[in-house]
Length: 359
Image (tube, rainbow, N blue to C red; front, top):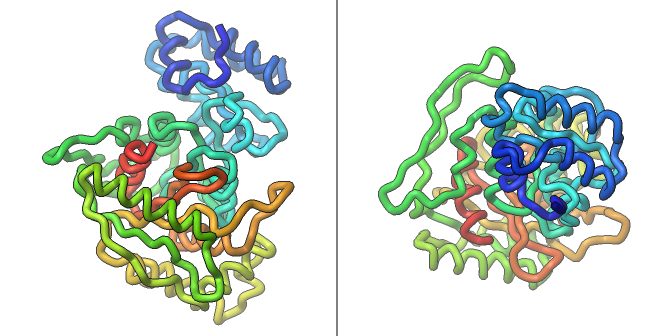
């Protein structure tokens, strides 16, 4: 059986039910992507021998990773039965091509969400601390997938919160869903956090042009935001306009940082630090307003060749790295392009729910 193009949910269920083996999945993957055969075969055999095989949420599921070495997030994937694949190519390309159903990469200055939008796949940068080992002021780990269902599944593993796997389902008008507070000393993750109830009637704000004047968004990309908002209105959500534009000082500081990712704090000096601190402490919350979720463009302009990123795209995506808020980019409308869903900390269930409704 050919497993390329199949979802993570389908692959894991087949392996758990004995309809396929992790070795067969790995063998098919090796022919498709030319990964490290010996290591991948060893991983597959180890998964197949596990006594808890029928309980593994990612049993035999290939996951592309963008960095070598063992990290806490990698350990969580392996513990869930995943097969980690290093192909030497950008993760978004492998997911878009159907070579792997899932990937994990570093979302630096929003770069992973931008690449996902260029390739027509979903990427979710969760709130700070949700995935172990946050990697810096502008950078977080983020999973990629072709469906909201797969994205919810892998996030539930990476976050150590199994309930997130069903967050994409609509609970109905009276439905509620939340996570208990807990501490996970084994993974040294974070202090306990609450997650707001998941509900079908959310207040959604649409911002088709969030950039300051002089930094326009391509008309078609702004139109995708309006169309996505209308789809969500039809699904039962309250949709309002969000005419405010991001602060010019923040956008300029973000763009400056994006010219050389990782060095913005040193280059900006004290004024730059103050701008970032204001945005983190209260600026993002004030600008966001009273909505549950905000829709903005995933891209501001057409992609550049050879994977290069436009600074306007960084200006749309990177503020949510800085604030530590969850942000999800997904294909919608003409491609390349799409929309980005943003919400306050703890609102990953809301983003997954809306992403499923926009699919």
